Length: 496
Image (cartoon, rainbow, N blue to C red):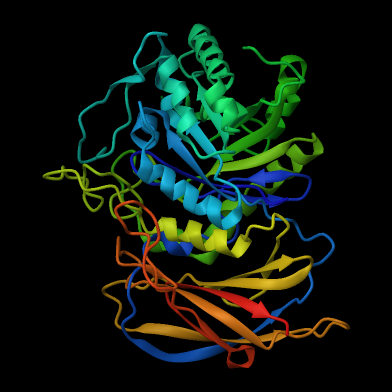
């Protein structure tokens, strides 16, 4: 089954993507070959030049080994120092809840939520602490979005998990980086206590994993469970891999990680960054959006995935296609109090709002659907900027997503378009699709931070709920599709 796509970032709404899967329950957190990379930032349509044409052949039937896609493919990873900003303290954050519930309504399952990341290793426990007591360093030009130097949490902090949508699966991180076993044990006990409460149990919220430490291979810089428990441990969470000696799953296995108490480790996790802003070095949004880069974020870990599968464990690519140290200005930061363009302090906080990346979650959710049986297959397209994915219901093609990952910027002279001529291989007893319903993501430029619409509708509302009139078109499949730079199309096929 294809696993989850995990967003990761700190202050307001999601950033990194994560998850694809490979057979045997291998789960990867972050975009598979480009599903999300193109939606880095998007908005309105201006000029379209003449189109070139591509012949695209789509299998009508899924192969026997085509993986089933998990309905909660789109998932989120949140820094611990900002957790209660998202979820709420004495009552739930309705805006955040709505954005999660939107995705649940599309797929039938809420996103998985991971709370931890780097700040989990700065967290200590005091039972009577009210939610979280945080100490932040001042922002600087090099670190405009700093994380907390210290977080002290109490039972009330973990109890806020109850504000998540019904049926949410959760991963909580505990402190390993400070080599303080007492902190890790106390945090674990409080987490187990929270998930034993009537409020969380009644909401069907499940603790899937405890992640003991985040990215231990970078440490040079920087309880109540049994084999029969549902909750297992998440292993490694490395920031990269040597694929052998050093920090890698292979080396950890050889050192006996999975023996004794390590038998509770059911899943290995790794992270992949496309760059870093830790020392103020900038980056280009276009570098994150290329089809080859997004594919490479996953393929670089193939030896580790294979080694993990041999051990009978699941694998999660927990963070990828982003910049470390909470993003670089102009690329991925999400904050209500500081500029996402240059990191400067805003005169006053902006209202809660979704970022362009959120539309990628919506698109993926609609493509997956809510049957729980959808299968996914990458469509072979011989083009460096066009990617496609077929979605199959009961083994038959139902939908396809097409992505043009070429970056259209304000300084671009014109906006090119590629024409896709769609074809199918005839299969006895299966009717060829004659018509398709076409839904488009409308965006001006890849750097736009607002003004997007998906099928004529917007999620840029005060409550995070969709608004506007639906705008889709039904056309003959023989017409094909024109797809512009920085655009996504969902085609739903009719076999009548």
